[in-house]
Image (cartoon, rainbow, N blue to C red; front, side, top):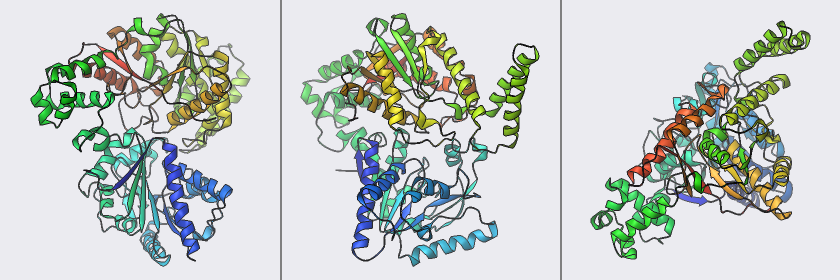
Length: 619
């Protein structure tokens, strides 16, 4: 039994998505070439298909996959949009794919975002004609937005819609705000292929990664066809495949509640999930669940395995209770590295346990992996520059040096447009602002200044929201730190809903560095994965639950407050508009409240961690 109305393939490693889909595209290209024809591909932009494009480039360079006779049509483009802009999908496609292939420029079709409005209607009509003239699209690549949009077919788009100029939904513009350095800079319109245009493709492949896509993936795959969710129209297509990672699949019934679909193998982890789920459905504490509760929710077979509801309830109750680790059960006198992707993820996600580890006299290093400088407002640079000028006027600094720096910064900022890459002086100023905030944050938790290491990994140093791929230089820096400190325990961000992808990329660099370190004879440390800025580990998934007192949560929030450039209105807040400290307070209190609802001990707040037992990939 299955509730899925679209063929869906789930993979454990998000990188495998790119390889699988690129392989399918290569099969289409080669099959058309062997038959004497040419493949027509519909392509998408955004972070999700980047892995596909990198693999296609590799196939071209290393395996001779030719695109000389391939025709492409892109889904969409912002309007208005200069094709040379950093935000242009035209530029994105050439920088991330076309420039590395042997595809003729004449075979590439991307909607024009730079045409006068009175020419736009004729242009979209010609775009449709060009697709038909090419023989239609053989394979259409899609991503999915939080509203369920495919292309820019926002809620309300009809099944009969064609390529057209559309007004962007507020949620879509909020999600794009990071790329445009503020929602106010995101265009309000776009040109997009219509739903009908997309559905005419002979094959459709749609991608999704990350926990933040799990709800809309379930809606698209298992929900009814709905004009408010354009992706549901794909259920009507005879050859659509959804490729998703395990995180994006979390909401699907076969992943979330597989016992509702039929017989399952009752592992200890699945048993805990099922009983916690039942506790919520029945609105009872675990120890109060009855045979009738289990029977009414299709879980009689689970009770039968354990003999009685009481035995099963006690087993799960004790399993959850064993996850709780107060200070006395936490590491003591060990070498610890906390890897923080940005210069505030440490205090946001694990400020509570950091304080406890300090009190347990561990030797702690906080390794800030990127500078986070793109997430600093220009007005913060001006404020710090004004501070320097005032110090210089009091003869505490060299007035000529400060004046020269100030003039260069003022001249640049006066002519800067949203998305422009900052000059080195501004990038350095923003980096230093975040470094000083990071040190102030860990001081609040009792760490000395020397506990901070700023790795400034090269992949991040583009000056733009879009980053380079993680490379050997990034891995080498992380490995050098491992070799220097030989840690017993490392903390790594497992928060893969980070909207910029930086957390995922930092985790990739750490995994490869750990593999190289172990291969060279180093002792692999224990790895704990934390979350916090975007969501928390569910109590059923967490390995350890660390209680926080009211005073400890207050201290953690004070450490977050030290990151002034990210407070009040962070440049890239993501879909959650609350300040980071507000999210943290709600999540940490929410985890404790969850245990209380399940009938366990009542705590003020809690952080959750998962011990990563997955071996690092080959170096």
